[in-house]
Amino acid sequence: MFANFQTINKQNALATMILELYAPPPPLGAYVEMFTFYEDYDPGYSVERLLPEGVIEIIIDLTETPKFIFDNDKLTEIQSCRTAWVSGMRNRFISISAGGPHSSMFVIRFRRGMAYPFLQMPLQELNYQVVDADLIFCRELNGLRDQLLAAATPQAKFALAEHYLLQRAKGHLEDIPPVIRFAIQCISQHPATIVISEMVQKIGYSHKHFLALFSKYVGLTPKQFLRLMRFQNVIYNLEKMDGQNGRASLTKAATTIRHILSMISERFRASHL
Image (cartoon, rainbow, N blue to C red; front, side, top):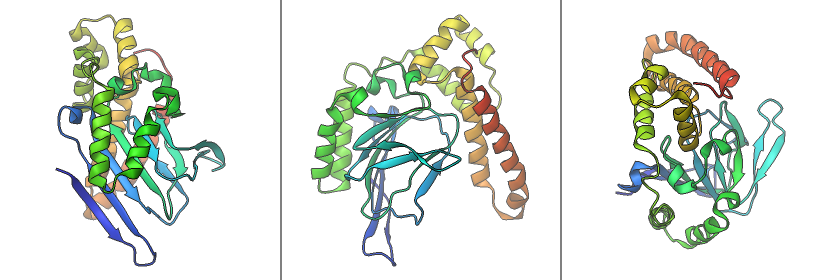
């Protein structure tokens, strides 16, 4: 079913902001978490900061206006992005253009550790980077972008993206080894208690071999991935807080987040388990 997440009528603008989300069904749904389409997203500020989430995304800009990545501290422009780009794994927040009047974007968000069949490259090569999509897909995504621009409805856009991805990954959906799928599931479901060395021992692989496989198919090392999952667990618990107890816990949660972000930033590039 197509999910119309929300349509917001902006009282102080000429345009209507459209935001629609779609979670594709199997088999694609096992690899892609969500498609997002929006038009005229105008948050009222020019720079948006996104926390690290441990996912890879393809962003297709349906306008001709370049978007920018900014230095996190100085907020100066450090990279421009046009047409389509791929956002790899990162260890800290990223500062990006926040949309504006007449903006229009289509975003493909892969599930954690599930992007490999579609990108078909060692995913650690994308770490800390936002890469022009042509460098990975040649000019394939330009064809999809043209189709998205011509599609009359969000539902038609979702169908086009679903068809393209299934064709792109044809014959590759089983490329991710079962042992890597198992490890992703274990770490994602039990970030607070899992011990990487014990998990690797149970799997029966050498640490070196498992590290190489995990980095290739996920992008991060197992410990890097675990740290991000623990960080996301803190965010999830923070979002559940409400009432006086929630407010009292907010300072503690914020302190924990700062600690985890600092730890991730310091250790993210470590190559050992």
